[in-house]
Length: 346
Image (tube, rainbow, N blue to C red; front, side):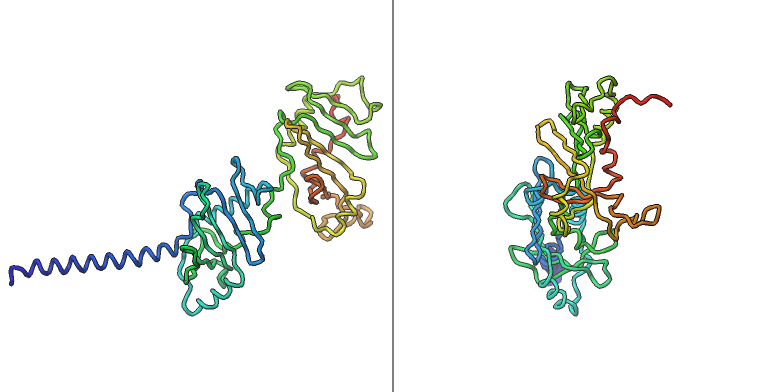
C-alpha cells in the first residue's frame, strides 16, 4: 500500500488542480465577459448606434473614410474622437455594491443609452451595452453589458484610466450636437468661382472666376463699377481664396424665435462658392440682435447697441439651417472689390 501512496497523492493533487482550473476558468471567463465593455481595435469599427429612452437615435457610419451622422451629415471630428476614446478605453472599476444594486438598476431602467458597436461592416453588433448616469462622486459611470441578446444581471462602475469624470456625455444622442460645424473646406484649386455680394452696396460686391489653373478674373457685380484702368493682383486673390480652407460656424440656432422674420429681411452679405463639381455653397449673413451674450452692450457714447458686433446670424445648407457665426472667423472673407487692386507704398 505504501508504494502506491505517492501515486495516490499525485492523482489527488492533479484532480484537485484540474477541478480548480475548471472552476476558475469558468467563473473567470464569465467575469471577463461581463466586464468586457471595451473594443480592442478602433480601426475595425464600421458603425455605432446610440439610442436613448426618448427614442433619440444616433447612427455613425463610416462612408468613404468620413463618419456620417444618421446617413445625412458629416460628424464633428472632436465628438467622434471623444466617443472612440470611451469605447476603446472604458475599464471596469468594480461591480455595483449589493446595497446599491437595486437603486442603480432602477435608475438605469429609467434613463440609459443603448450602445451597439459593429465591426467589419457586419450586420450584427459585436458589442452591446447600456450607459447609465454618474456615480455619486461623478468619477465613475454605471454600465450594464448585454450578452446573447439579454442584459446581464450585474451593473458595473466603469471609468477611463488617467481621466477624471464620468463618461455619459460622450455617448451624446443629440443629432444637432453631432453635426459638423464646417461651412467651407476648399483647397484653392477646387474653387471654380466665388461671389461676395453686399445688397444695397453694389460697389463693394465682386465675383471671381477661374480662367486657367493659376489665374482668376475679378469682376464687380455691376459693370459700371469696373476699374478697367487699374490692374488687380492675382496674389491678393490667391491669398484670399486660401481663407476658405477651414471655416466653421459657432453654433446652430434653429430655434431662434425670430428666425423666419430675420430670413425675410435683406442679408448684409451673401457668399457663394462654386466648387470643381459645380455644387454651390451659399451662406447668407444677417445682423444679429444684441443679447445678454453680447460682449458690447453700449457704444462709445453710451448708447445701447442694436446689433452684436462680434456675431452674425447665417442661413446655410440651402436655408435649411440657421446658425451663429463669429466676425473673428468670417471677417477675413468679407472683402470688398477694391481690396484686390494694387496698393502703392505710402
